[in-house]
Length: 170
Image 1 (spheres, rainbow, N blue to C red):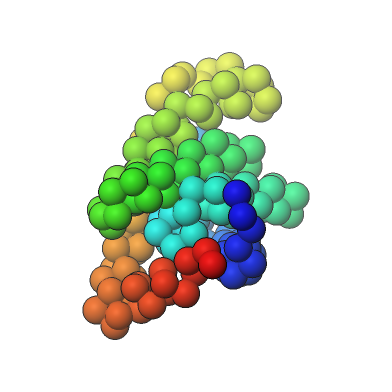
Image 2: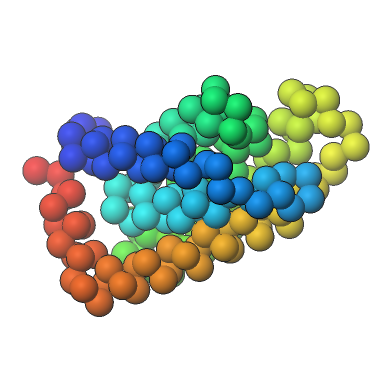
């Protein structure tokens, strides 16, 4: 994979934005919902592609964990959602697939992947396979709604095609 400096810079700025806005979370059940992360996952998937989107999600989760504003459960949720949303968008070039991939990746798959993390690493033996699916689904749905509103504004302004063209590998 050829390194795209513009995409790395954008991913770094999105990481900084995600970390700085990590104070805005909503407690739902056993997890904290962080819709800004899901908004940024969708944007990373559309503008950066799968590799950079996963790197951004990992970096944001790692920094948030080191700062004490996130949990270990942020890794599987954000990374799977970012990858699936970006991969589906890259394959189809339809914006709705990025939203669907983020919801399916984070809400269902990421929520299910949190079970082993919660049971083994956090010592939560009461957690069931689907314990985190509903809270993650609520969080990712909120983030995807925000992303859809933002993408509509960017699309009408012509910024989507401009940004995608600017970020193409040369």
